[in-house]
Image 1 (tube, rainbow, N blue to C red):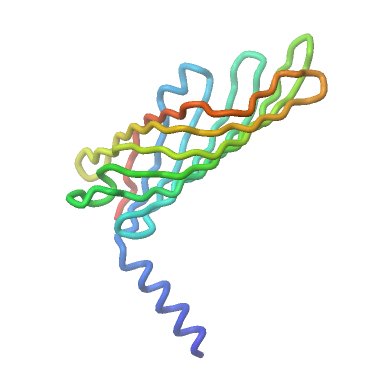
Image 2 (cartoon, rainbow, N blue to C red):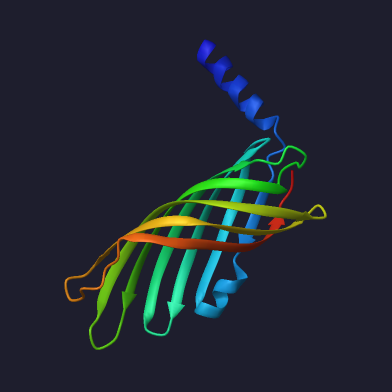
Length: 164
């Protein structure tokens, strides 16, 4: 009985936050044959989780990407989903290329971003972010191109707030 009451108390406390949910797309990636979408879920008054997925469909290259950010909103005068944020992130990608030398490669990264999200009315958001990421790559045995090291990470997303 105590465990049940504890679980109900935790669920009630979590549900006291408005729990905004925002569906996002990265429109700039379309120009590169990439579809990137994500879902930001408010956890507390000043934090959220942002999983994302990408599909790569360029000529001769196919693949998927997954990302996860934990966002901490820093603006004291703004309420979620608006304001400055800091976000540690992890990303993974798996790719295959079909040409005279078929090969595959995968990439993992750890990084962080700082950004700003604007709320446009009750439903729409725009955000931009930038930060460093450290990448680890591996490739199939028939290719020797790999890279382990830092690269910049830049983001621009348009969002639609599903409600509070």
